[in-house]
Length: 613
Image 1 (cartoon, helix red, strand yellow):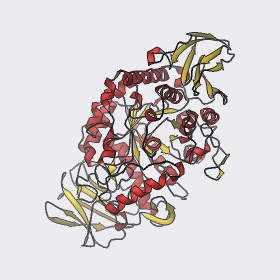
Image 2 (tube, helix red, strand yellow; image 1 turned 60 degrees about the vertical axis):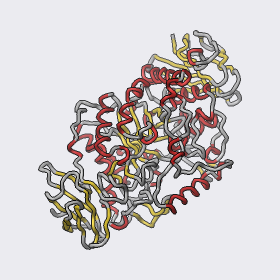
Image 3 (cartoon, one colour; image 1 turned 90 degrees about the vertical axis):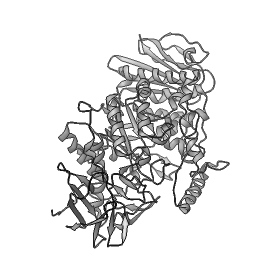
Image 4 (cartoon, rainbow, N blue to C red; image 1 turned 90 degrees about the horizontal axis):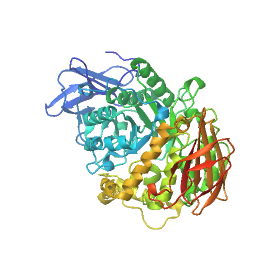
């Protein structure tokens, strides 16, 4: 088998239909490569083909065999495209056959992106057990809540058993302590049976430090650019073709072999690539081709901090074609509006006027001068639809990157929590909830790792201390290496037995049900929204409509009663949801019916949603 290009070669070990093992490796730095099949005590030499590629077909490797790669007869390393690392990132790789799984989701059709109600979760802390199997046990809870898409934080193999997942060093291997590849396949199958799409968080901007052996094989990194993690992944320097192929094939693997519905690509602004075809664009082209071949829909959602529509503009407009992006600026403006201090990267946000702008313009900064960044920043996103933006009141970053990892439940009253939820779920964008917020989880979500390298562990501790210098916070960050930090980040499912927490869950249920069934909220047409802001009173009135259906969302972020005048629309209005109602553990009464231009007296920290009669 002669290879003239890396483009269509999937790296790693796979079994063909006849059960023969086929292995492909890019290792241009090696002059001789062998596979050591450990328990069989045999070494199989690979054949060098072209462009630094090494291959073998053999019947001497079977499913379940442990193997290592031996470079130049002396250096033993795990497979850089291993599918299973049962002995951790430093141990041997395990041969598995992803084609063995018996899928039952043949008739599954991915939900249209504009209807996604996303729930972000971390496998290790979502349940007491911290496994994929334990997530399956909670799917009925998510179904009852109204969730139709879960987003799983990264599962690529990382050091130890405790990690957010962004320190992964084996992008093709599924974390063994979570249950490994077969259990992830089973989880996805179960989600589809429940009508729930699965988004997987992947990291293509860096490789973690511990267990990172990529440089022993080839030129995976380049010194052309500096990144927060050291040398950048090599997407545009000499030898980059194989690196680009490695990550493109990884994206396709999740869709093909795990039936993942969408990928959330972490911090794509940190990807350094000045190629004529950006790596994100190349991945999008490949995914579009897969969609065409299979008749399935797979989405790409980017985390991007550049306010640059090039990332989400379609290929036909020379964009990178990402289907959607996270929009942190909505979160920042929302949290400042709720009364949090404007420190660190919050310093750029003035509060409710910025929140009003984000409702209509998505980006708060679309050309203005940013004091935090010390430059003019962003472009306008007028031509991008609402379904291209994901908004939230909290997520893993915005919670866990606080020094103490406080959730909104630890920072705000139940009244403000209900208002924040309403602000997200009535926005003309894709809403995302962070695990546990639906019942006002009281445990923090803190940053945790389990590095075995003590010097690295200490460096992480020091890094966390420096990270919070701009926030002028007192005290010390919890030790990321501590088991206590990890355990304190787990959800307390028993809180749902408490009437107060159960009531919050029912409130979220009601909001999500309204979002899914009222056409004016379900439609994400950004041209059909008007926002009236009163900075002095800290109030917003959001008017949305779809054809003849109209809805008004009144929000009072102040702590006292405020007046909000209804617009002149020649309509009568009926209360749908009032967050301060006794039904939601409030003690306030408010009229059920209103007419045009009524001056509504809205209690502090509350939300009122009105529907036309």
